[in-house]
Image (cartoon, rainbow, N blue to C red; front, side):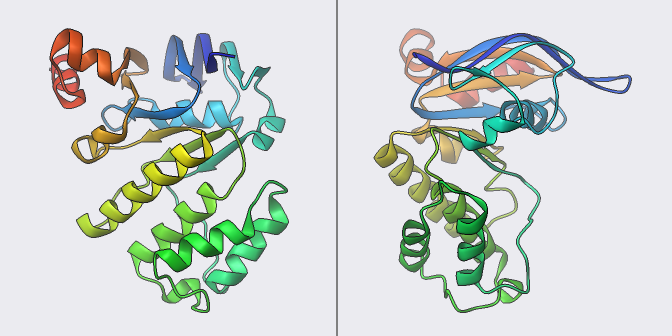
Amino acid sequence: MDHIITFNNVSKKYGLTTALKDVSFQVPKSGIIGLVGPNGSGKSTLLKLVAGLVKKSAGEIIVCGDHVTRLIGSKVAFLAEVDSLYDFYTVKETVRFSANVFPDFDEQKANSILETLQVDLNKKVGTLSKGNRARVKIAITLSRQVPLLLMDEPLSGLDPLVREDIIKLIARYVEMEEQTLIISTHEVTEIEPLLDHVLLVKSGNIMLSEKVEELRETKGQSVLDAMREVLK
């Protein structure tokens, strides 16, 4: 299987509002894929479709060799932009809870990541800084032993030092586990050095699906350059 995700003529409507229009693309297996585009362009909807959290209105979606249903969750880990951590748990209890929910969860790995990041496992989640809450969410997602990781704006609203921590963490573990990660982000300049492939979404359409290396070599463009060209 050369491609981990295939969209064939996929559309998604919420009532009368069209979020994605007749979208077709493929995502190569392994590596880090940047999902970029303006607010409201359809990035979150696309990730939710891949995760089986919303149903398509038309078309075909194949993930990890299977047509997407709610059962695709056994092959996909999804980190939503919304913070869903429970404030009354300690960090350690949060990790244990995740281990109980997800059969593929590596509890030892999660604790190891958090200790490396110097997050106190005995602290209540409700007392953590925004940066440490983000570190907990990232650690939990990276500790799912699944082929595909999806992260929706994991760097949003974080200070530069926290973003740097998280970017290094993502790069290390995704490569180590040979997983595929799709990361939706506005922090294009910071994340670009990690990217193998880019998907550019505008107004519910895929405007660009390209290997980052080919962008640089054939067009002499960075991902940011390509965004500016498409969005101008």
